[in-house]
Image (cartoon, rainbow, N blue to C red; front, side):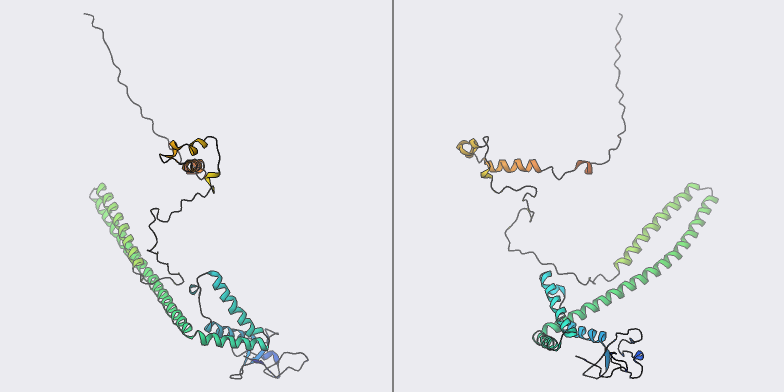
Length: 320
């Protein structure tokens, strides 16, 4: 907590000055902001070391204190609402410490100390976890920089090798043409080009694979394991509930064509159910609603016409 500087400028209503003679020369020793550039700059005195600081530096100092105690992240909460409520509480506490009156500041300091005392173990664990995450992020950045450097060196080396291969290829082609083997020169060129493309793909894949595969991306939540104690589902969790229609009770649907099937035992004794019939009818009625043939139809390709030669049977009458 800080208090305003007691010294004031010569003019009435002027903001407190720490230089005494010329308020325009006042400079915050923390952020180096001068009153010459910010006429509304207000200085406060730190009660611990009695050094002056501006209001912006005081707010940054308070936010650092609060963030060091309330250091939970989104992964520590079950829902987004809980995380938002936590952030709102932290922001209300920070506002009370920065802009609140004396009673709110005292209440905020008390709440901050109580939270730190009751959650000391969790705060230390979060600090350790954040330090490990920062260290992992630094290692990942270093690995990416090393991989980029290796790719640049490999590109330079590949360019040099390509120039050497081009010169060798040109020499082989000229030698083949000088010997009068034009086909042999073309075959040699094709073989070398194919070999070059294969080597380039292998080298590029080796560079990507060598970039420390043990590093992971920070911020991803851990996936929950599937519960093995659930009953067996032959559909593997697939929901077969119709999404385009809904009928709560098939028994309330009356039709003169179905009354005989509902009341006659001869139909029901074999396992026939009107509900199954209605379910199948509704499924068939709505099964094509999500299918758009024009969007899924491929472009028609003209098929080559095949001419079939039909043998002509020639019959010759025997004149004898």
